[in-house]
Image (cartoon, rainbow, N blue to C red):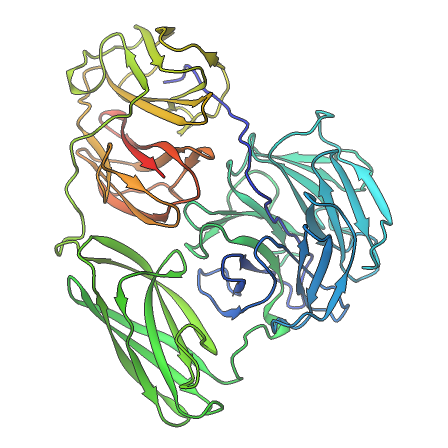
Length: 596
């Protein structure tokens, strides 16, 4: 139904590290993340969703990561900008040691970038200052501003959500600067550092994505990419043309800050040369148990050691598992079997297995070598792993309806019929209304109605007209109240008599008042469509970031599930499944949950 779209400018809370570098020594850049909560760095050398190396602990929570060849040796290093004291810290060899510092330079609130901005072959640092939309560059890492330039994109006032990127986008050997405007998905490129927009691309990527840049396809020109924290997926646009050319993941965790560079040639793995671990197989033996077979090669450099394994959620070790290990007395190669036991009664899903080596003098939390592998398992779910869909619930303080009724009791609409939408709120609020557009296959892409501030206790009405021939439409109303609450409600209705019960979406905690999730908790989303489908997409309108698509690529099964980690937001959230069918048009349904 192509009638109204709401495009929101979302205030990104906190500082986001968006770091970009030029081509590394082997011609293809890798991706990595800095996890502030544990001060750990993770590296994926092959863009295959596998952790190839870790470094911990280095830097501090609140630091913003950068990456580039800062010492001129031809390989990329890592660094951080500590906004609180305006200090830059550099680790040239990825060994958790500070090799150099520069202080004071830049200001609190600045967002750091890195690249060879003066063309001398060594990467420099810079910052984008959102408050005045100006870039500042330090070419010599000496705490001196060597150049500054006003951002080229309009308007000439601060735009919340602009995120900086840097890379050699025009292949002239000097790194350029760019802006990713997250609320529109448009990228702006300034090739000459002269406040001129030389190119744009998009819309591509969505609000909440964190941008990076690097030469990911090895063609000598830097590409752009984003890390989507909500589903832990990386999206790559090789041609700067607003097209997703590749994806990787799920890898990394919500809250991680992304970087890009040629880390592999630097010897980033902290493990001794020759040590190796591989996950051969995982066999679930019961609802609470599984056996992980691990192959290893050990050089003997730490004496007798242990091999351990642990299920993970979003790259973090999952709770309620017994720790098990197997001993290796001497150097050599072989296999061991680790028995995994889940000790809780609740139904959960894990998406990975961490395999690691640690010395007897250390602890399982202090491995000297670790690898992460993607493996999806369910635990405590009664064998099938999929709880039945519950009866839906709804929010309080907000009401959304249409003139013919929502849900199974509503009368169907037909093509061309008028549609009267009504809603109420209990306190003054800023309101946004979303719907699905079958022609572009997405939610909320085109702005046609800005509801603005709505008054409490009054029935607000909008008149539209049905423009889709068949299907089930789901509207989502999102309001931010004067007291700071975020409330949402949804309404599904039939077009041309298509049953509103043909599709369902629910979570491992159900829907409604009982479906309460907290920060960093794992959630499983299930869907079912009682009709043949050509593609299925799942969306979330969440309290913090507004509209997000959770599916990395359209699904094709009539039923399935997604696992994700809940972010740091509070308020109502609505999940929507949208299935394109050859017989019934687009059919949608929703599930209301609460974030605390």
